[in-house]
Amino acid sequence: MHPFRYVGGVLHAEDVSLARIAEDVGTPFYCYSSAALEGRYRELEDACAELDARIFYALKANSNQAVIKTFARLGAGMDVVSAGELKRARAAGVPGERIIFAGVGKTREEMAYALGEDICGFNVESEDELEALNGVAQSLGRRAAVAVRVNPDVDAKTHAKISTGTAESKFGVPFNDAARLYDRAAELPGLSVAGLHVHIGSQITDLTPFRNAFMLMAELSSTLRARGHRLAWLDVGGGLGVAQAGEGNTPSPREYARLLKETLGPLDLRLMLEPGRMLVANAGVLITRVIRTKTGRDKTFTVVDAAMNDLIRPTLYEAAHAICPVLEARASGAPIAQDVVGPVCEAGDYLARARQLPRHEAGDLLALMSAGAYGAAMSSTYNTRPLIAEVLVRDGAWAIVRPRQSLEELIALDRLPPWLA
Image 1: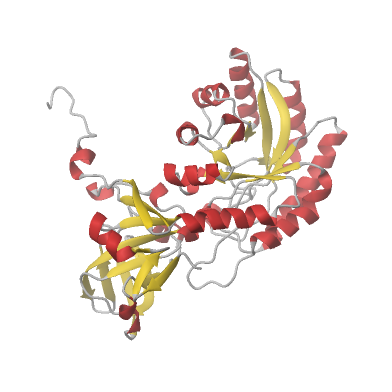
Image 2 (image 1 turned 60 degrees about the vertical axis):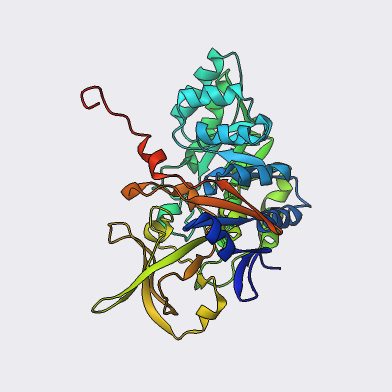
């Protein structure tokens, strides 16, 4: 059963009417399906059953505490990239031993905090970071388990802003420098070499880039072992894409797992998987209400109450989210080309461009599909627009998992200096 479907002519999340939620919490709001979150996780877990593999959910995709807790109860570890994400994971009850700290700009304060939480390990991105982490660990009388993030110079064939494995990317160390850095890490008394790490990008819809990167990691692991390094795990990152509006099928978790087994299975290393988008994207929708329609000289605009500050992906990544009316009858009208835009004072404030959709009227509810990843997590308060509500559904029950911020709460975050008070 699809978690978002029409029941009695109204779009539902599991067994809950999205129109009913809109009446109670107002619009816009995000809604997530527990069944979709849990189902996708179990699909990946089952696909990897024949592998020695562990799943570490990438919090950056959706860091709501309810989402984190849902995955934690299924046994997931967490991939974090800041002290804030680490604190979120710990607040959701995830033990330190199931947390990996990644990211290119870890501060010494963040390193110390993570070491104090006894995390599983650090994915290190430069020689300077190796030296810094060693110093912090020694000052605390600890040893940090590390994997060096290797940049294999593999084009992931995805959007330039989410491609992280090419030579011009800020992420990782060059493949040809990796062995030297592992030798250096082994010399540092505050570090313990534990694994390898690679992550080539996000929203990857072809397995070929993964294959190319994994083959290079297999080669590197043999080189490192020959140099005396004992490796326990290989962190393969995330990146497996999800279908977006206008796209065809993407590789399934089972196809991805077969590739892992073929390329990395013989290495006798535990595989760490860091999925984010693939677990949460299709588990969430953004519900928005039409304010008015506007006809320009060359275009029709549908103005809605959600904006780029609520969902920046179309503007930032040219992401195409399918758009469905909450009332099924509204889908029967003849489609016309239109831009779906928000109220923000920017020409880049759009949710869809030149999209063939039925003509809408003021008050209509629309659902932007596949909005569970990098939606609420990347939202802002630009134009003094408060952060919107988030809702989690389970069967016929629903709960607000982040309240809508009020204007008073938003403005109260500011402080006046003494000379203006």
